[in-house]
Structure formats: structure tokens, C-alpha cells
Length: 122
Image 1 (cartoon, one colour):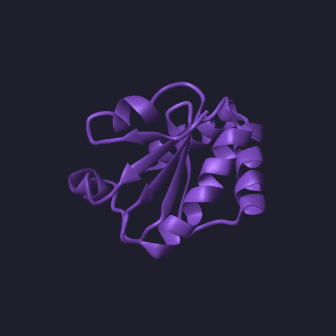
Image 2 (cartoon, helix red, strand yellow):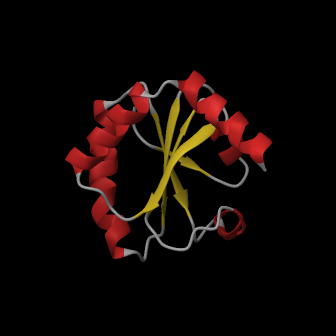
Image 3 (spheres, helix red, strand yellow):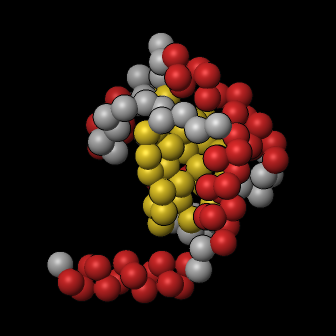
């Protein structure tokens, strides 16, 4: 599947569904973002079952602020509506592929249990 563009209007609906969604927060003026784009596209071609979404932080400044995007590119990965990864910086394809495989292998029942325990401890 090719990458899709998401906006303030489509972000929540995109990341809150079932399955894996990988969001690349970027801007056209960002050199590392432009360098990472072909890697992100290649990973999307290799993983058609995953939604690969691009969020233009310049065009969606309010959402970028709400997400507290401090540095770009920032990569966020959601699985079944839960953010399971977030970090800034461009990744080489082998690292991104390994990260995707780790997310695929997650035991989501265990993740939900850990989240519940964290919330109860607060």
C-alpha cells in the first residue's frame, strides 16, 4: 500500500482503528524528512497490511503542537489504537524493518494489561 496523507481531520480516525498504523511527521523544508521519505515509501511497499501515513507538520500545525512534535521527522507507531512507539529521527530501512517486525510481534493483551496497571498506579 502506498502512503496516505493525514490531517487534523483524519488523524484520530486513522490511528484509532485495528491493526498497525505508522505515522511519519514531516515538513517539506526538512532535509532529514526528505531523505527518510524513500525509506518510508519502501517499507510501505514491503508491508501492504500496514497503514503508512504522512502528517505534514506545517500544514497541520495545531495537531503537531497537540502531539508535542519537537523535532522532525518524528515516527509514531500505533497498534490497535495504542501508541507503541514514538521517536524522532530518520531510520535506515533495516532498522525500520526490524522495528515493524517488533511491533507485529507484540502481545497486545500484555500491552493493554501494562497500560491498565500504569493508569491504576497514577
